[in-house]
Length: 306
Image (cartoon, rainbow, N blue to C red; front, side, top):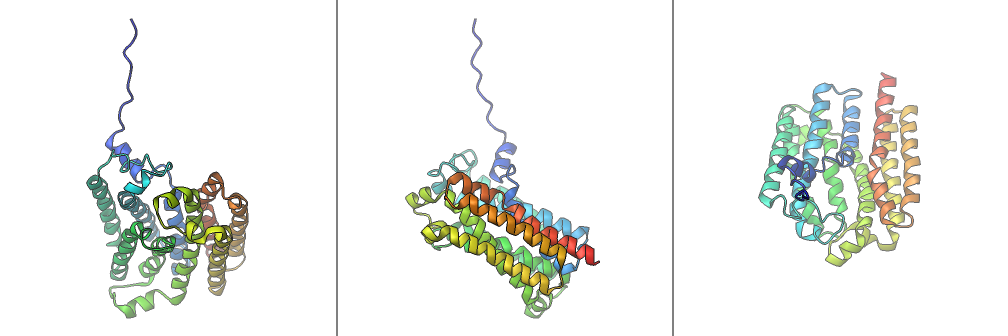
């Protein structure tokens, strides 16, 4: 007598939520974490203390996870037409829109609870940071290079890191100018170029699908100049962070970190020059090591000087 056929058990809610927030893909939150922690170290002139390190590390993970929830809700109609994203929980109907937004809201509130342990200026900055993060998923409908909006969203941890270290109870413009110097905003702009580089690589993976369904991306806007543009964005990122770092007195260890990042950038060119999906996706997926190299250079340099 033959055994009855077995059917795979449907994934638990927890498993679906883990898929929703890309728990198995830490590269996403690492891309946010390294520049934020680099700014935290620069603002503090060294180790910022366990409290702020915990707040910004956990806050980065939580906000990136919340952003995934909002992004999947906003893109659910587009994602069903893209092979790489068609099986996302919201897109395939395994998680409802309301449920995904509720998960995102809980995660964002948990991140805000961490921010509440800092100071008034950092709390005030968290509101525009949230607004930009929520706006990004919808930017691709109207902006020819939505990756620039993502660049601001992914870089806003930099001024928040400075405000957490140097801010106080005041949260007006004068307090902002005192806590977040001009060169901190320069770091934000430099990091924006890095986001443009790696997210254009990401957009190159889906270019054919995005053209078919009418999404605007930097890969489509840049056209045949995409590879040159990506490499230029990388160079601007390293140039801005390098110039500011050296101006702030960083030396040999920081230079080694920049050199390690530059070597990786050169390797990424070999991955994306033929515009293959696998090569572009691999370059995107490994980009967090570029950010780590710069961050490590900052940490070692400040510890060495101290």
